[in-house]
Image (cartoon, rainbow, N blue to C red; front, side):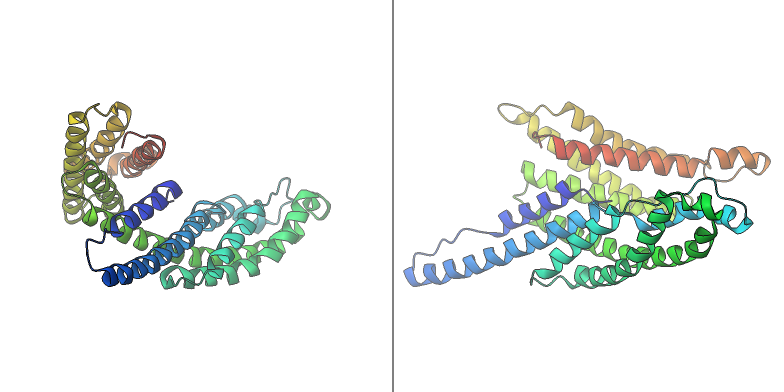
Length: 326
């Protein structure tokens, strides 16, 4: 999931970089340019306001694909067996309502964002179908109705709930994809617009290439470390490392020097985890051990490395959000 502080911060950074200074001496030209600048600024503010609400929607509310997967694991076999239910729960209705509120609020704003507006509309339709099913089953779960009917209602309605969750999850995936694409554009714009060889330039470069590395890591881990996915992943990590090194040099050369040892450690750790994963794959560590299949499945190195790499990225994001030194 995307960090709200990080996304909105980068978007505001774009606004600052794009609002250039007018150097014309002609009064009429200045007035015209001032009007154009005001209109541009108002448009930029409208974009920021709407995008921030969408980012809030991405960070709050339920992750419905995960919810669906979890419920299938917990209840599919139990309900299919016809045995009495001794426990049954329903996820919070807040997961639905907070998402509905933020999506509706964003759609009320007129600034066009088709890559987010369309999946937001689709999600609202899907959430409206999910809500009454959830409400009925929430009452059933909270009143422990499953003890009175031995789980009859759960067996009847859980498939309806699964279908409704699937509908929301499909639209939510489209929404996340739209957020991701717009985020990449914003970060690329900030990087391209920043003054070269400045702290801001290297800061934007770190974010740009770190997020690119995370995206490429998905292909790498899904392919079990295939070389055609390892190479672009490695190249992106190298670019991230270069930006980190230059940012650190620039920060230490300042007066007073930046003191960012914890963040620097997190940044280097992120690159290191990615490089370790590539090294493991190239040394054959991602090939299943036929003689020790059970042990390999229990300690799957691909899943292990994907998890630790993701955690290292979380540490980077948390560090970027907390620190003032970058």
